[in-house]
Amino acid sequence: RGGRSAMTQLVVLAEEPSACDLLEGLLPRILPASWTFKCIPFEGKQDLEKRGPKFVKTWQVPHARFVVVRDQDSADCVTLKQSLASRFAAIPSRRPLVRIVCRQLESWVLGDLAAFAEEFGVPSAHKHAGKAKYRSPDLLANPIVELRHFVPGYQKRDGARRLGRRLDPSRNRSTSFGVFCEGVRKLASGGP
Image 1 (tube, rainbow, N blue to C red):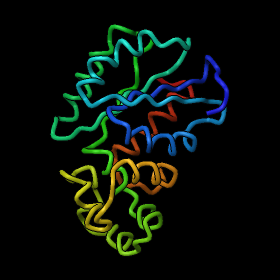
Image 2 (image 1 turned 90 degrees about the horizontal axis):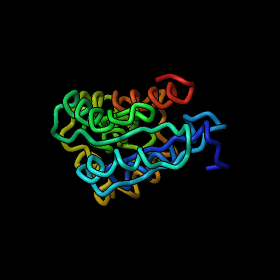
Image 3 (image 1 turned 30 degrees about the vertical axis):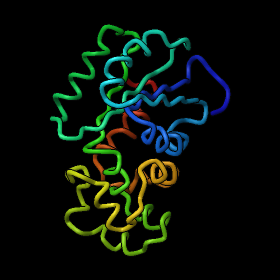
């Protein structure tokens, strides 16, 4: 996105390509216009945890800021975040913001059923937004199953690509989505 500026590059390390697909639509809407970003997909959690710290350490753009994004899945969120943060602790000048997606990326999609309903042409999905189980999408154990109730052929990457540009931080009910957006905004404004 745009030209390169040493002071304004955000580098996101994500556990899988679908996270990058979603973030490439979302980040231009939450970052200041002066910022560029690069999203680097890894080949799963273990690959991110193993190669991520070296990747950050050897990144060639001075003053870049980093965010690590990983699904919670069935792990304890606090323990997982601490474990990831400790893997990057050896690089204090480049310590990334660590954000855990509770439980999976599709929880962020379920958090904005209005955007999902509009993008996929399924108005019935929006009508379900008020149901108790969709009020806290981060608590759903298998959010992709929920999305496939509305769109049986729903595919992770296609959905992420299409919805990244539509998810609305102001109405999204996923707490982890809100925490991610707020963290990125704070980081871009010069916060820790």
